[in-house]
Image (cartoon, rainbow, N blue to C red; front, side):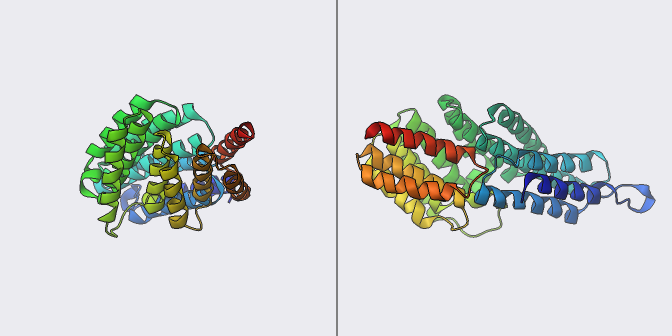
Length: 310
C-alpha cells in the first residue's frame, strides 16, 4: 500500500478517536480506539518488511499525532492515556526507523527524541525499550560508536531487558555490535554469547508487534556483522548462512540485507565467485524493495567493492 493510502487510513482512525462524544458531551477514547491505531501501525510494519519503509515516515508520524491529539482532547482514563502515549512513542520510533531507511538522519533524530519523551510519559517498559533501541540504531547508523555503546548500556539496564529474555538478548546484541566497532573483541564476544544464551531461554509471551523483527535470524546477522568487523570473516559467513536459514519468508528486506552481509564475508575471504552469486541473488530481492534506500545503497557499495577486487 502506498504512503498516501496509509495516511488516509490513519486520518480515518482520528475521526473515531476525537469525534465520538460520550454522555455529558465529553470526548471519550477507549481500548478499541487504541487497538485501531495499533493495527494501523502494524500495517506499516508489514509494508516496511516487504517493500521497505523510507516512504512510510509521515504515515507513522500521523499515528503519533492522532494518539497525542486524543490525549489532549480530554476524556481519557489514566490507563487509556498511558496506552495512547505508548502508541505515540512506538509510532515515533517507527518514524525514526523509516527516516533512517531513507537516509534522513536529522529527521530520525527528531523522532527518536519524541519517542523517548513519549515513552517516559507512557510508563510502558516496552515503549521505553523501543525508544532506546532506536537510540542505539541511530548512533550505529551515523557512526557515533561511543554513543552507541552508551545507549546500548542504557538499553540493557531497562526494566524490559531485565525481565524479558528476548529483550535482554536484543540489548546484549546491540552492546556486542557497539563493542565490535570499538575493536573491543573480548567484550563483543561476551555480549553475543549472552545474547544467544538469553534468546535460548525466551518463552512465547504477549509482546508488542514491533519486536517481531528480532529473533534467531537477526541475532545471527548482527553477530556475523560484528565478527566481520573484528576480522573473522569465516565465522561471519557461518552466521550469515544461519541468518538466511532462519529468516522469515515474508521479511524481504531482511533477507536482502542478510545476503549483503554474506557477500561481504565472502569477499573478505577472497571468494569472488561465491560473492558474485550472492550479490546477484540479493539484487533480485532488492527489486521488490523500492522503499529501502538502505538496501540499495548497501548493494551499490558492495558492487563497487566487488569491481575493485577483480
